[in-house]
Amino acid sequence: MVPKKKFLYLPHASQEDSCPFEEPALAFAEPAVRFPCPCCGYRTFPVPQEEALAFICPVCYWENDVFAPGEDTPSDENRGMTLKQGRENYQKWGAVRKDLVNCARPPRLEELP
Image 1 (cartoon, rainbow, N blue to C red):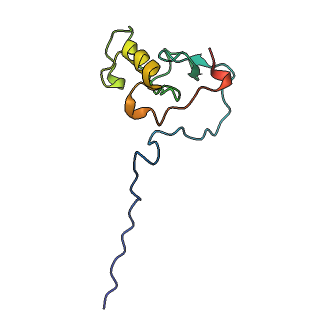
Image 2 (image 1 turned 135 degrees about the horizontal axis):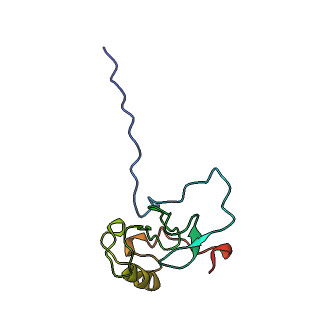
């Protein structure tokens, strides 16, 4: 009898259990100067907003869009949401989208504006 081939599968994840967008552990030192997120205003960006290509703020989960210059310009990185809408949502829910509330974290003392 030929033994059956064993297949290894990845475990199934549930959004209720954990956040799929958790912050990665940094293998390098944190920058001494942090820059404010355009949405929540906390200093979470490691580089100026103009250089933070696709950086996601861990406090509000706004994905920085260097190509959307205005508050009322739809952002492709944020599913067409404008920066103004993102700010309103952050004030209402604590994240730019309701489904990201469990992923967002409170700001740290060093990130306060």
